Image (cartoon, rainbow over all chains, first blue to last red; front, side, top):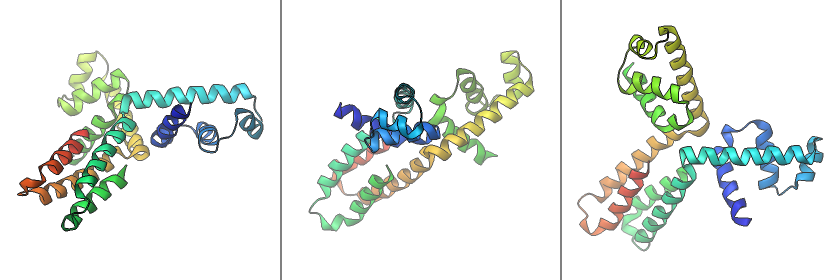
Length: 109
Length: 109
């Protein structure tokens, strides 16, 4: 479950701009702010089932976007390569310029 | 016009998976294979206006996706940083491992 939560947090991070405002609100409360389905239902004055259905649909949409665009997968691969580059550059102060570029690439994700 | 074509080629490259098969076909014939609107219309047995409208709508969708996800913008920024890293690494054979990581990051885009 923790693994799924982490994955959903990342997918939400990458694709939230493609969701509707309501989907964004529910997902953000559920996954980022750790609200329960019941608490979200109360907040929006809808049934717990409606919130559940909306979140399940949104999760499926996020997985579909990831299947098509692979942003999370590429992010993970880039992250690994950046970590390795940093290891190469540790303790090499004369390569500061390269370190700066690596840091800039990392920041872009 | 050439600049617009280049931009559309890139946006199509990044977001084509989010388009319908018909949108993909029209865009690919028009932007990659340089078909005219009339030729596409003939190929699909529809009016030239229908093809034009579909392509205009698709172009607007691609721009909307870019506004939301910034994949092309980030790609350009990464490309610039990768070019600079390569410049730092040119003529430094002892830094081959780093060069390999830079090449791998470049390939991910």
